[in-house]
Amino acid sequence: MNASVEMMEEELEEQAPPMSDSELVGKCMDEVHRGIGGTQHGSSSANEHIKISLDYYFGRRPGLSAAKALDPNASRFVSQDVMDGVEATVAEIMPTFTTDKIAFYEPDDERDEEQAEMETALANYLFFEEYDGYTLLQVALKDILLNRNCTVKAYWDERAHVEYETHEDVPEMALGMILQPTSEDQQVEVIEQIVTEMGDPTGAMEMQATPPEIMQ
Image (cartoon, rainbow, N blue to C red; front, side, top):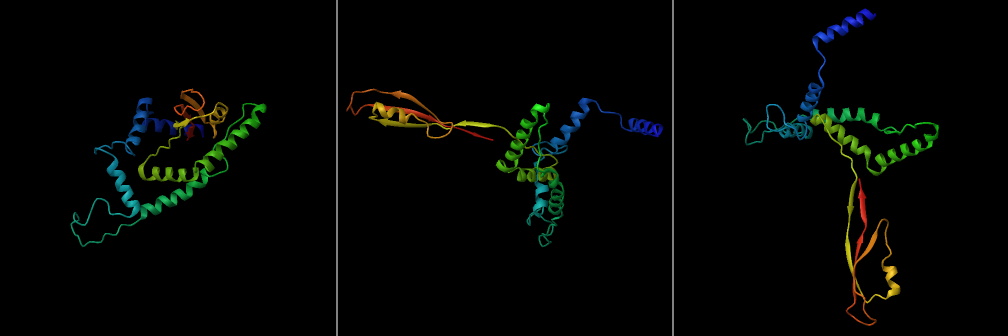
């Protein structure tokens, strides 16, 4: 048995010698270039190839309008076998990714088991409940089948929304109430203040409210 396995391995090595790291990277990049945003061999862009795939998926006759067709009276019907194949394949693959734990954390030791369980529950809750992970997986699988590759980008998007308010004739006792944040993570800062005597209508204070909005 071992002799047979060794002979098979030798035959495979003779037929297909192992690729170097640079060759493997080149092969991977070729596949990426054949998908969305890449450049195919023999064409200036992969966009035309992607457009044809979508045309077949939606049942549109690719690249031939009635004006360009050799026979304008010919049937315009396009079989939607591509859509049927893609949808059937996605339906078969989706159960693999829609388990209760699409991601899990392994504890380093016995003391870390409870923390790992909490992190696992949080990751799965955020993916499926907060970020509509089921739909995201469906879209990614369809992109792979139609366009040869897909990319799902996840990142933290931190933004600060700034609002300016101007208050006039503010009593000193009320100043503390105005400077209190009214929402979570809001910061209130006085950027300009003019102190006047009581009853002076020229007194004014301008504030900057900065509630950062953190989205993923």
